[in-house]
Image 1 (cartoon, rainbow, N blue to C red):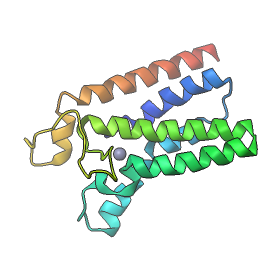
Image 2 (image 1 turned 135 degrees about the vertical axis):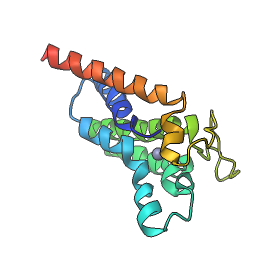
Image 3 (image 1 turned 90 degrees about the horizontal axis):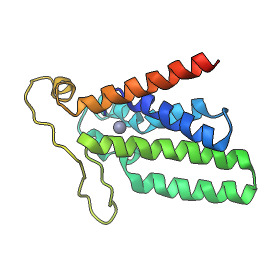
Length: 161
Ligand SMILES: [Zn+2]
């Protein structure tokens, strides 16, 4: 997934907030929705593009699961509703990112048991420029759909004031 992580995070966070009857965590949810992609900076700036983007730890569910379990236990022990809400919103968005990346990306869902990467659709290399391969593939309609959906919620929220 390329450009729809943020709109998808917006949809998930506003939906969760409605359920939790709060509106304090939108920014946190949006940050979490794109956080696993910090490894892109690494990929381009530090490692000189030597490793495939999704092989970094921030795209491996196992590590996030560990962090999530520890955080949720701490939040639970602290008996603070805000910590719990914040953790739920944060990690829901992280895992949404990984799920969306599984559509055409490769995510190692069963790491550390196997390094096998999972994906739903394989995008063929048709154009020389890799961004075009994804942007002109039919799965890009998912992204367009998510953007339209987020736009609709945004529009409705503004109308409701
Ligand atoms: Zn990603």
